[in-house]
Length: 499
Image 1 (cartoon, rainbow, N blue to C red):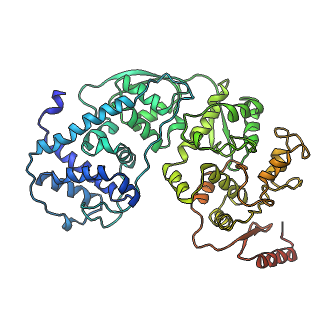
Image 2 (cartoon, one colour):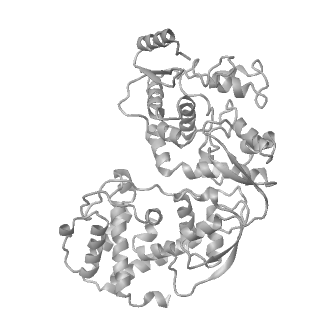
Image 3 (cartoon, one colour):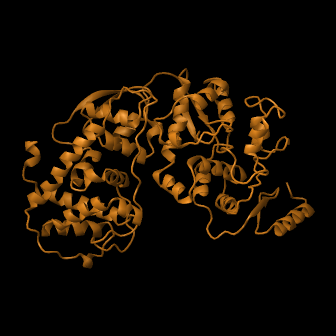
């Protein structure tokens, strides 16, 4: 630790002030709730700012101007603090020493099973000015956003040591570089991968690496195997290296469109020769994937047909031929876990909806729209839910009509369901029927894409419609009353374009 106690150079002092300015900019974007949550940490940042020397204060203000967040002529003048530059800088290093110990305790061995639970991260701050920091006049550029997000999630570690954190993520970790081969076990979580990197001397914080991977949505693309890495590599370069599979096995690429059901996913895997449809469904529904945050937040109703429905994220994936089915399903779940952000979880709380309810609503929006009308369709569903109405969606109703994109008929009565229409238990059919009972179906009716999920979370504002229907030309028709809805229906019939 003697090397950390040396006198800081002028460049290091300037860099420290710059990073502190970047943290100040992020603080200014917090919501009131986040400001309350991070009150103690915000106070620490303000304390660091107050201790800046005139030269460091100038570098701090210059960085805000550079980011376009502070007019050049508005840089506030402050009296010189009763501390030396070295003392101001050393305060940050002392804080980091404590934070680094906490990060080391958080790291876990890399040889973990796929069932290891994934810790929850903090939410990303968004808006609102923080008290006693320079007034920001306009929205700044993103810059190294991933690095800043890691810094804010690790707030306690960063408040007094911004230089350390930014250098860690950027690959500036000291004079003595290390180059070695790191082996990542199959099924390792991002935290386990970070632990392996930390133990090998490539990085200094497994926890920071885990958060970086999550915030950059890279979890689903990380491979396992042996990788030649250096401690001079940035987190971005390390992730890029870990995305290149060095396994010599053949691979198969499979694309899952938005709105496919779990059964359709399984059939695509079978058609690709990767596994049988039944094997896929057995693992997706019955195996343990508690390493992902969303897993423990799902509601498992006894009447729900498939637990996996709604969480198999639609995308294009590359699978190893002959790989374990668990690893294949894990790729799909990892993508959902990466795509469903902390902001989305916070929005669920604002809407007073559980994760299952939100994904169920998104699946209906996906089937009824899945296009530029998604937010409007979502608004209609939200309005009906608020008024205690039935949703009345034909994609989930208890009618024996072929070719109607009806989950009950196509999936529950299908070969991977109950086998026939008459074999569907009445209580199960009714639990999915959006015509016979108010509220949402008991579970999702497809696997929605990001557009539908975001529409379910943020529906069209100032929408008072309670009804909608489409015509054979792909147009959407909205109404506020049943009378108006019936009139539109008659007009569509008269024109011969009612579905």
